Image (cartoon, rainbow, N blue to C red; front, side):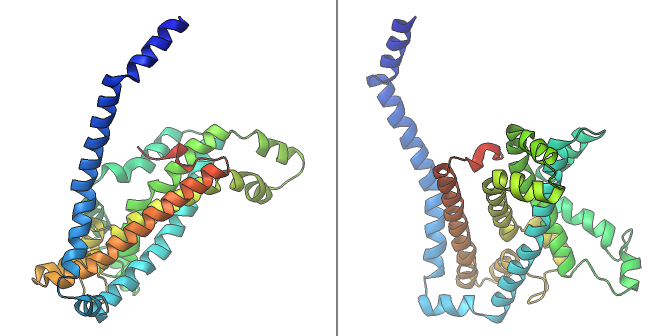
Length: 291
């Protein structure tokens, strides 16, 4: 049995296995170069096609700065809300048995199955001028659609699963024996979460927050429907890129798009650092990563 296993190992590591390994690696690298690296280089090449001054003028335009501010504000509001929801949902799913638990898990995954455009239409059907609760809110001076609340709600919806889906598998794997011990020793709920649960999930939580933030910055479909494309008011960075492109202002569009590209690269760097640092500390934030 042992000799047979050794022979199979030698065969896999022989010339045929080496050729297969080289072919697979080359295919993966070509795929990454053609579909990731090359388009990214093209964006920066187009952004700088008229020089650094033209790039700077495009990204410091008042409308572009307003779009950046709105994008950052939206992320600052949506990501913490999803962080709270993700922790609460993961705690409920992994620590309690209740009727409708499977339904809750399915609802968490719902944003992955629904088109972002449909999400925007759902929000309009609720909060629009002719929606279910929109007229009553408008009568009280509360506008959701074509305003900041609508942009935030759309972003919260599409980014809802990321934190929860990072935490649920990890908390299921960790179990709750340590929490039960802390409870027997007299610790309260907040103490148990802060001193027992949080240290064990902190890297997965941070990983989920990074992914949710990246998704929030780049969201287009749902926000496009509920924003109204009001320049300088409800246009996020992706929407502002679309407006510039539709106006045939290509250099400015690519310049503003380069901001999103830089944010994406920064997010990737942060994600890689969290993964590396967690492995150095003996954890793995990708244990619950979404496939």
